[in-house]
Image (cartoon, rainbow, N blue to C red; front, side):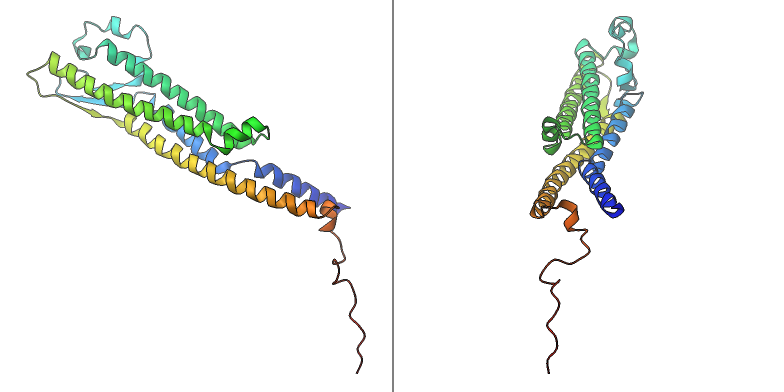
Length: 232
């Protein structure tokens, strides 16, 4: 009896762990950390030439009165309303990426058996949406760099200026690569996990007694039949 209970407990624990994907969950939590780091005072755009703010970060655009208060500040005369709205769009997309990564993290850790949640995990929909958000952020960053360069040429045509990407941009770009690797891991682990679970179900269904067939002290026939007596 204790042996049967131990085998049943081991089977229950194994079935619980099989529905969890710890490796993709690690990728999700790393992605959330990197995106959160890019939202603080990390430069996304570096402006050289000494005619404008030396860098732009997302933390400068969290307050809605930003353009009105700093409209007459020469440090921000190269920033127009379109750039401000695009930077705030990046903030929104960053939070969307964090929400989807957090949802994928909880799905991989908890491993719910609901059909809808299993469909989301099986096809890595949460991490796929996160990759799309990051791709949109990178595209907007390229457009902002073009707008910044045009604004600098219009406001200060006699000064040699340039716009380059800062650490925040490279953080979000590396996050996209990490989430993409997590997506591949999810797809591979879910497919192999479903195949192994189906094999185990077929093996258990073959024996009507469940785990008792594996815990039987006597071997199955024909090995239980004693050999014939020796005759010279």
